[in-house]
Length: 118
Image (cartoon, rainbow, N blue to C red; front, top):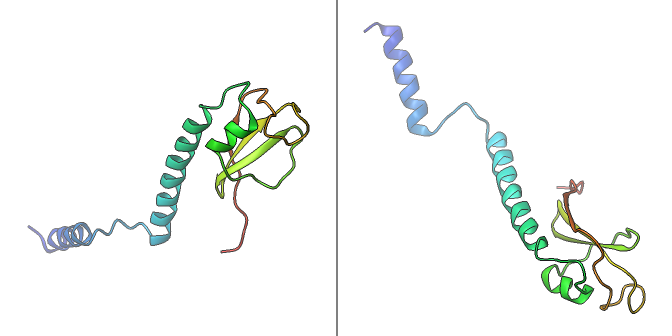
C-alpha cells in the first residue's frame, strides 16, 4: 500500500473515531433545533386535532393554556413554542371573549418565526 493511501486511510479512521464529519457545530445545532421543532409541531398538531367545531373557548383553553396577545378578529391565537402558534375561530356566544364562545371552523397550526434577541 502506498504512503498516500495509508495517509488517506489514517485520516478517514481519525475522522470516524472522533465523530468528525466536516460538519460545523453550528450546522449540527441547527439540525437538532429543526428536528426538535418538527417533533413539537407534530405534537401540537395532534393536540389541535382534538378541537372540534362547537367546543367552547373554556374547553379549548384546557388543551392550549397560553394565549398569544395579538388580535386576530373573531379568532384567538395560542402558542406552545416561540415559533408554533394555533389559531382558533370563535363565535360571540355569551359576548366577546367569553368562555361560552364556540369554535366555528377549522383550527390552524402554523409556524411563526421568532425574531427576538438571543
